[in-house]
Image 1 (spheres, rainbow, N blue to C red):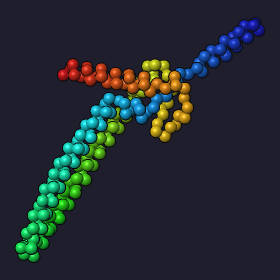
Image 2: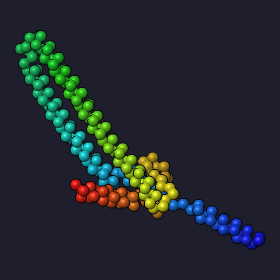
Image 3: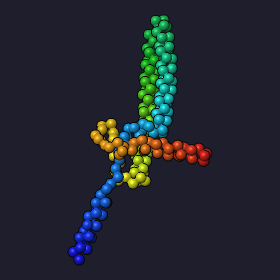
Image 4: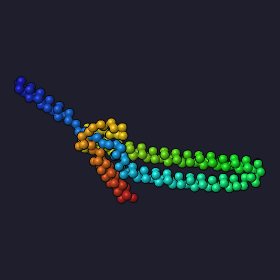
Length: 180
């Protein structure tokens, strides 16, 4: 009976030791997000949009400057009342241009931030599913503040996640294009 208890105890200890082995890994979050194809596309889109809006606003500012110069050329020949009226009109126009500039830049900033937040959320969800699918107990995230100071290279799954993330994105895009 004592032998049986010793064997049973040894089996329990062995079994509990086996259960404590956990699969862990870590990813460089910044690299995963920046190398994600969808993020690159979004950055290009918002950079292009920003450039287009700036060019449009610069054109309006040039037109306004031409109008101001035109006024400066003829202001001496105008009556005081007409001059004051024109100056108020020009100030209102300048304020309108400034408001439009602020509004348009804010739209771009909010739009790009919303899309970036959505992509980051998508990456987090992907990593969570990747961990479940590949039997990980923990996947740690290494960020710009370097919360992982050391990790064995074989535990760094950043490149694997990027490949699979971009691979699944390409499959999703191909599937969506096929359906259309």
